[in-house]
Amino acid sequence: MKTPRIFIYRNPQFNRCPVCKGVGVLHHSRAKNMREQIIKKITFYRLYRCKECGWRGFLSTIILTTESFKAILLYLSLVFATGYIIRFFLLKFIGT
Ligand SMILES: [Zn+2]
Image (cartoon, rainbow, N blue to C red):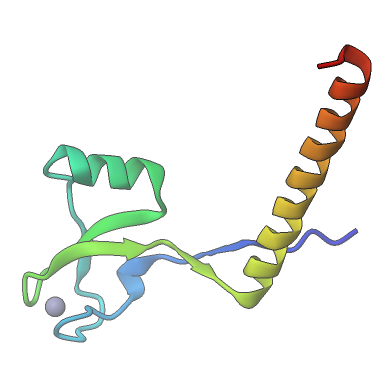
């Protein structure tokens, strides 16, 4: 069975700057506070800074496609189905 690819990795350093549209001007930026560190740790977003115009912000390191959403829906329904089955057996054999 073919496993659908959920996330397609990309390197935002090759993206255009969202402000000045410069190419090859984005560089990794350090997280300056707790909030930025948390976002960096738990999401796919990383901090970047533009060396041309000074823009600084988060850019996603992955791309989600329609295939991704289909795959996520499929996995979620599997999780819920499994949860439901486990709950059913627990209630049946252990009782309330
Ligand atoms: Zn820029």
